[in-house]
Image 1 (spheres, rainbow, N blue to C red):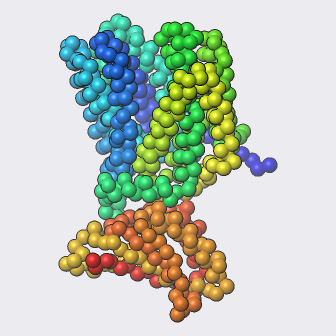
Image 2 (cartoon, one colour):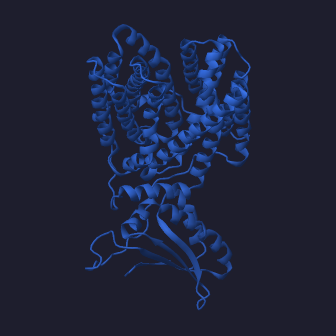
Image 3 (tube, rainbow, N blue to C red):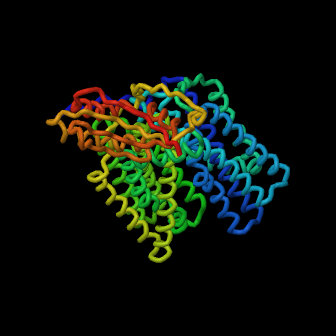
Length: 527
């Protein structure tokens, strides 16, 4: 039996000063964020707003992630990520201060609260893809699972502490004080990011436009089997797993008609996620990531099914601890897999797409299980949702976690052609560009060559090509011509940077079949 690779300890990423400082600052900021969301909900009720306004508070917090996630990811890959985080943090501080001042002065109204809540969440939506994308920049690849687990611990600790702390502050000093503390909580992140000496990799290709970067993100996901597998698996699991958290308020009301019971159940879920993150490294030392992920999904599904029958608050609290542990086992390792299979140039964008899939699955699942509960009852809905979650462990047979050892370091070894510009081609935006690659193939290697070169289709399309083809010269039996069209010369220059060491195997397979150096030509449309 092969020996399991050594798993780094959970605390090893904390040896990196920038990660440690960011983690400490982030836990303070997230506690402030949970205080703000709790205070906003309470303030809306206190303003005697109708149920619609109360419900719209949650909409104002969630909507920016659907509206801005993808363009935010594109911007995060185009600009300096450190500066983008500084700008978004500064924006959120300003919005939080305005909200605090208006509330303390007694000038806040329901509509103003909704607008400011939306503005605050918009800053978070713009920052989130970039914030997740910088993780591989501050820790090594080997420490990514532990760093992701620590981030999960931080977030769930804040979720367990923030609402309760907000209740104490609101009772003692009013909602405005909770909003003011949220504004202050951003100071740590601003201080740490301002002092971060981030290494900025110099680009050798022209920068992308916002629209071009967005299209490139969708194209990259479409032509990346590993990313599609991870998104499909997480979306399917989250559709069923969303049932427990969506129906938890209704379950708490059935067990004990008290908001305190709901808060206690959420706190136990967060505490369980912390425990699960602490145990994850030990589990990975004994079992594969596939087994740990499937186990986490099974634990969460069984917990959901058990919640359908329990009506004792202490028993449900214990069950939520178990469910939280299963939740974080799945979520952390899938998130790490997405990071490991995304190169730096498109990382924030792919994470934005991942967020859209995740949030969309949660939204669709919550609506579905809410409808089932309305028709058949909360217990039946939880039973079906739990059974569906357990059934999703079978995805390990069809949508297995991709290999985590893939090397996505840029491998820009192609020779850039010398282009003679004319009056008709003044800059890098001219195009479209037709690229042809001529191969002289040994007769006994034709079959192997065709198998290998067809793998280029996915790579070329993933990195920017709009069309691709392979042709056989009828007048020269040894000659095969690969063709692909790129939108512009600038986009072709970016293709050179996007080729990775993981693609090297495909190129080596092709090179073993040819008898001379391939000839590359670049043709520009004259229309």
